[in-house]
Length: 202
Length: 104
Image (cartoon, rainbow over all chains, first blue to last red; front, side):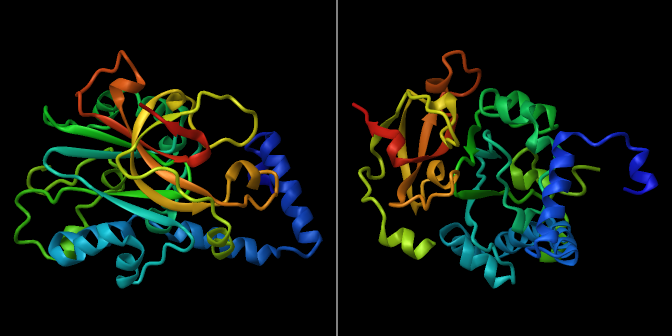
């Protein structure tokens, strides 16, 4: 423990348990401190920008979009992304259907394409409410859906992981793939936001 | 693991479009079936494949034979009688076969 950590106050039970297990794994030669650092760095280096690139390609290339919905693993590999052992399902928003993803049991999330999940995704508040009152929760994210849209909530309870393919915003016909990727936020890949045209959002 | 799971998988009992009811049971342990859908009826959307049973994996057993895993769609109004929202709103949940039984 260094001085900066001391000033954070005493570690809780789980933080102490994690430290103890980590030290034991290193002492027994099962893991190395360098190996742990590398894994943490690799985890931190993944961001939703990967998912955004996949979405932008699907927006400009109808054949790619068809492959992405049919066989996500192979389609994301075309862009150089690996989902590893994860089983990915891509769900498409349409003018009449809006999709939103949750893991009510814990925090399952397509980390290989979206990075580390945001704090709210793991909160009891989000997990318990989005299945029961999705419209109210989406509104709290500033995601106001037109009336008449059906909502599909995807509870990621087992071996599948889900990414939303948002609707391409109107007014983006002149934009290239890289510029389109900039419009794709993490929130709209989880389904709590909509991709917005830069002019319409100000 | 995946190859051995495929070799030792239980045959699927349900097909796409089948109506299924989630067993209303409350066993202890690492269960991946949310409480809010137990006892409710949904429709099979797709078969996701067969996977080692997580209730066994949690205790360091091999989880075989692998359980077929389904995506089941529930009407939100079926899950919650006081649901506020459209009649077509749904929740889709992954459920292992041993938690499902045929529904009329």
